[in-house]
Length: 250
Image 1 (cartoon, helix red, strand yellow):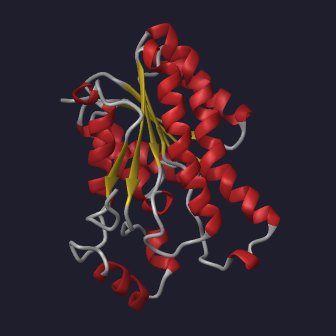
Image 2 (cartoon, one colour):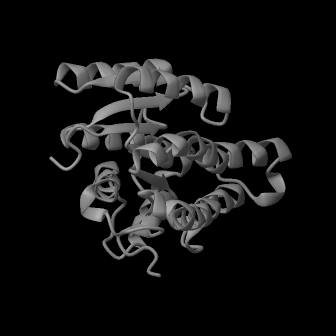
Image 3 (cartoon, helix red, strand yellow):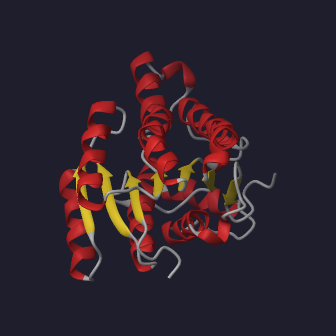
């Protein structure tokens, strides 16, 4: 198993790509701390994992708040004493709208959930990983942070482009400490949130514009995350892995 015995924190873990990442890491032998604002959702997920023999914690946390992150990290360290892998998955957007219709508060909220959360969570685990001389940080970016492939919202696209830039710089900064930092940039993926954001006809048109003629599945994104979190990717650092069916080729 590629993550046997590793301690993994996954943010935004209650559903969608986050839940798929949690399940994939558990199949690879990891011990899981699942974080989400949806406390009941992550508890249900963790209960299922524990029923299958996985050591799992469910932690309600707002990862845009350093105090919440600190409390969650204290619980993880009390349980397992280390953190090997951080997957910064929290974020997303609710409604596709034109830039002139975006309020300042909404702009700040989207940047906080998609980009500031990556900074805060990474900052919190870095001292631990540096002491260990080992760590893997995997950040969830997006195809829209790579190119103008599909219309979403300008604040979400800006935040995901920021994730890619942050990933590169942090990789440069901490590579000598035994820590790798990489990103996965999913294409349009068939999660509940994504499917709700468009009409079925709009979703069909998006799928037809992808060379493989379909949306991605959450499990396919999760497999890329597991690879980058594993020792098979020990010499990959500062990279953004595009998992998009050819939606964008860079």
